[in-house]
Structures are given as structure tokens and as C-alpha cells.
Image (tube, rainbow, N blue to C red):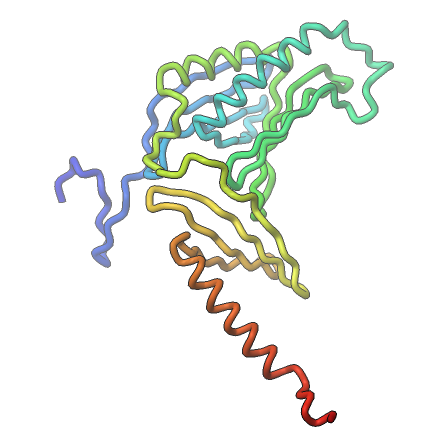
Length: 247
């Protein structure tokens, strides 16, 4: 293969898309923490990976679509203004849950929780990311004094690379929210997403920490629905007692 095509050819003859590319990096030193903001691109589009490195070398990461990074940038402006309006910290009069202000951002199957908090060590902005279909929560904590610097770094990256996620997806509306259903000891998650091939639904079954999933293209949903309906009707006819014997 021509190296310029940036494709990996497996022994099976399968072609894989190129790995993610790093387009830019910004490094911020805020108090004892270092933050890396990396603009990356893969076959699904552009995004920003935020990594927090603590004094002991421990890393925490968040993934932000470019449009999500824009929304976060705007929230950082508001949080910064609220922080600037607060008086000096008072360790003897902390909020009951430590929260001074909270916001929620939703992007496809990801949720981002923004909490401006205060504890005995000071004030900070905690940003938590969860995936609605399950999985661990990841989070970073930005010292409140560094929110402006963090916001300005995001602004620079967004001005250079744009706020579009870099995809050619046709649908620009809001996709349906994820759904969860529990049946006996199994959990089923229904997540609607979108990629370069179109809209899809991923149905995941989780049992005893074991996960399996299928992906159904949107154009096939009605056929799946009709097939399920047919089976439901047939089983209903087979399992309901006949009224003829009771007459």
C-alpha cells in the first residue's frame, strides 16, 4: 500500500481507517496541576482531549467534541464571573454540599456535570463526564483561580480549528435521549448516535459486568419494530387461553 493513504492493512486483508491524529496541544500549569488540551481528529471528526496531571503523576481525562468545548467555554465565563463576585473563602461557613453553582451539558450519549465547589482547601471547578450506557466516571478539577486561563486556552483552540466537530453528518438536530431497561438480572441500554454512515441505535446488554451489544442502522428500525410486533402478537395468541373452552 502507498504510505500516503495512511491505512493499516491487516493480515486478513481488512483495511482500517487511520489512527487519530494530533493537530495541536496546549499545556497549562495551574497551581500544582498541569493540564494538557489536545486537539485530535479521527474518522468520526475532531475533538479535544483534556488531561489533568496531578503532583503525584496521576492522570484524569475528558473527551470533548468541538461543539461541546464551545459550550464549556461559555460556561467557564459564567462560572468565572460568579467566582469573582464571591468574597474571601470562609472555612467555618462552607456550603452544606460544597456546591456554589452547577450546570449540566449533554452531548449524544455523554453527560458533563459542572460543579463550582468549595472545601477546606479552596474553591475549584469539578467537571465530570459520564457515558449514559454505563462505564466509569472520569473527572478533572480546575482550581478556581485558573478558570480564566483554561477558558482562554479553549478559545484559542476553537478559533484555530473551529467549533464544528469536523464530520459530514447530515442530521443536525437533537438525537433522542438514551433509555435504560432492567429485566430480571439484566440491564439493557438503548443509545442513539450518529457517525459518518448515518444515525444508529446501539442496544447493549449488561449482566454481571459482561457486556454485549448490537448496532442497528436507523433505516432498519421500522423493520425491527415490525418483526418484534409480529413475534409479540404470535406469542400472545399462543399463550392466552382460548375462550372457546369456557363457553
